[in-house]
Image 1 (tube, protein in one colour):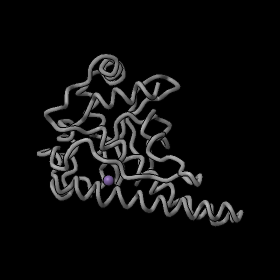
Image 2 (spheres, helix red, strand yellow):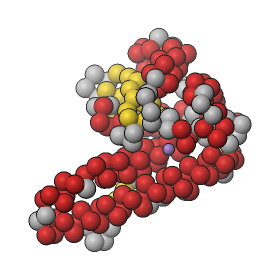
Image 3 (tube, helix red, strand yellow):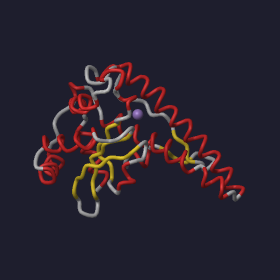
Length: 213
Ligand code: MN3
């Protein structure tokens, strides 16, 4: 079951609610690639705010639905997309990362598919970096599975739009909002993207591929 399916679940009242997930590692465990200060703020402040605002919006949505207030239901959809997307995206992102000493290159079927669809792991990294560095403003870079063809593809989304809006099933997401790197990398997004490969948890990416099939 993928992150998108477990990141939010119906409460006893029938309203879908989100919960901030614990990280599988300490805030400082991704250093030197991502500082503990960034991780702490990013998880405990930014992600938590998406969780809280998603839950508020869903509560309001449920109230509006009970009243048959379609106008209010529609007006809440932007907040649900933004905050729900923020929650789903970050829930996947934390699991896509692991301490540098625990990360190993992709193997097996995932590696075969990368070599088939991009030529090599380095070629995938280059394509991913080029597209993700080029995201204007805030957004995400994605490695995803195109289920119809069974092929891997790289995509980007703006703001907190989830990968599913591109038609791909997400396997790996990289946050390129400035809050993800600015305290450490300042304005140099390419340095952050090029460094992040040292903390990509390819085992988790392979697990997402298994779940997506
Ligand atoms: Mn973020």
